[in-house]
Length: 246
Ligand code: SAM
Image 1 (spheres, protein in one colour):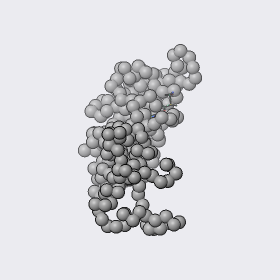
Image 2: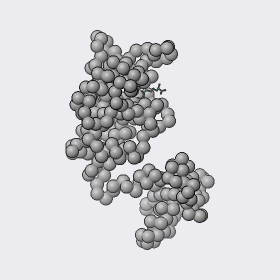
Image 3: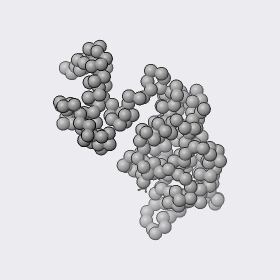
Image 4: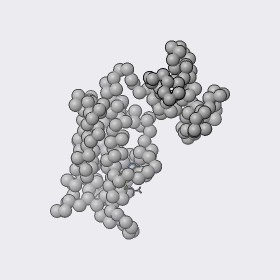
C-alpha cells in the first residue's frame, strides 16, 4: 500500500519541496509514498481564476471562497475517498505525534492549504474536514504546515527509517521528551559523556535514560508532564537538571 499525499494548494510548485530530499525523497523515489497536488485555481469560474474575496463584515485581507474550496475538496474526495481531509489552520487542533502515527498507518491524507486570511468558515460546516494547527504562531500559508505534517508521517511509513530505528523511543511517543543524546568524542571542551552511558551496563543505561526523560519533561514541558500523569507520578528524587534551565 502506498501512502498518498494529496495537497490542495495555490502553490503546487512547493511540493514535494524539501520532501524530495533525504529520507522522504528516497522513499518517494522508491514509491513508498506519492505526492499529488491539486491547483485550487482550477476550480475558479471567472477568467481571472479568482479563489478569494473580501471578508464579510469588513477588515483587511482576503478569504478563500467556500464554493471554490467545496469544488476542490469534492475533486480530491473523488480521487481519494477514504483518506481524511485536513485543513491547515492556526484555529485547528494542535498536531500531535499520536495523530501523526494514526495518519501514517492509513492510506494517506488530503491536505487543504490556506492562504490570505484563511478559509470561509462554511467549508467546515459543509464538508467533513479536520482542522489542524502546527503551533501557536501564524505562517503565511498552509503549505509549510502540510510539509511538516507530511514529513512527520512519512518517516514513520514502513521501511522509511530502516529496521534499526522504529522511532518508538522518540520524544512524545510515550508522552515524554526523549532523554539527552551524546556521541564521540568522549570529552569536548572539558565536558564528559555521563559515565553510565559508557559503562556497557544496559540496565543502568535504561534506568538513567528513563529518569532523564522524566526529569527533563517535568522541567521543560510541565504541560506534557501533567498529561503524562505528572503529579501522581513524580520523577525519582534527585532527578533535577543542573544546567541553565534550572
Ligand atoms: N487569519 C488567520 C488567523 O489569524 O487565524 C491566519 C491566516 S494565515 C496568514 C494563512 C494560512 O496559513 C492559513 O489559512 C493556514 O492555512 C496557514 N497557517 C498559518 N498558521 C498556521 C498554523 N499555525 N498551523 C497551520 N496552518 C497555518
